[in-house]
Length: 369
Image 1: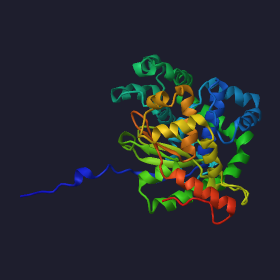
Image 2: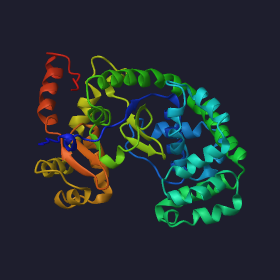
Image 3: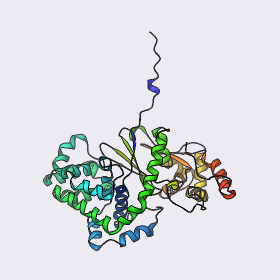
Image 4: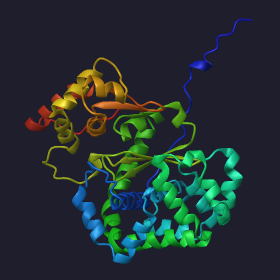
């Protein structure tokens, strides 16, 4: 009997959900403010450094001291992975209420799983510590995966939280969130909510006609996830705070992609040029970024290859690649080794849309397909 087997050609299925939560903005804002306290500043954010300065200055001394005690903003990113367990479109108050009744040991277990640093064989030890066995903290945090230099801030934060009782850990987190919300973030939640909902609705509509991979690429301005990143359910969550950055967080059971709210979903002067068009031409107005585009026109490349071919130090290359991706000019495949490639349709479209805007011949908003 002859058999024609085409199943091996089928790509792995992406389990994609699109959601929105005001608490995502709150948690990302806390992450940025917390990391700035230890000198780890996230740059190139659309809201600007002054916006975050004002946010921090509006906090009481007590709340700022609470944030500084933790010494690391990763706690707040770890909590983003809890959003799928809450109500769709919930408010910050809803999320805080949800945390007040969340099992304290389960909450601590979620924090331990955030870096995905421990093997399955350590799960029983993790559970003991999560349930309050403080005698095992040193043993757990001495695991080889937690001794890496880049893990130290999170390791120190974990120690701080785990030396409390489980109930005290939950109370610390709820208290910090409540204070940050009431002192500085409540007005921003109201201001941003309509943008989040508009983008959520747009992406839900897009998902009805496009593949999950294509929806992810459009939402993130050019990020393609490799197979090893699609083994878990993926949740797309719009975010105003970290625009134009894409912030990805993962637990043992979900992969969260905080993507920037589209320019089209932010209220603006109808006579002003579209924000994406401005970003695109700013991205093109730099010799180094033009060198990167020319290199990518010859084929995809890794970070190291781009650094060599475009003669740009790795320390500054990330900045240029982020601006090019945010402008829709390049694509990046996120896997074991990031690979960058040119989005060939963007440059011809740029000239046409610029002409449309200047001469007012047609709507200069982009059609995604």
